[in-house]
Length: 96
Image (cartoon, rainbow, N blue to C red):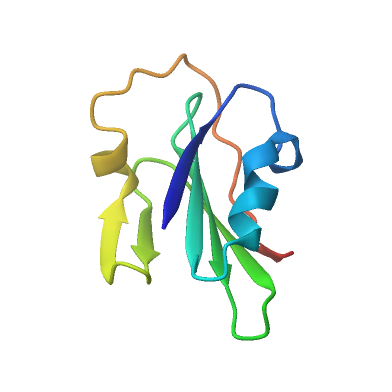
């Protein structure tokens, strides 16, 4: 598993290491963790080789990590993070 934090206002396509991650044959999962809101984008390699994107947002949300076999709550991940007041964008599952 690989984990990277995202910079404000950058999209997944603007991270050069992501293409590198996708080329690692043994990598099954990677996470992009927001530093501006409680949000994680999770990419899971499917048997077909395609990557499935799942997004979770909000401190009450939970994410399952199949590569580690454990769940995490966003409240745990962001326990000591203070965010500027702003609405949280809703998570939208999609396939990439």
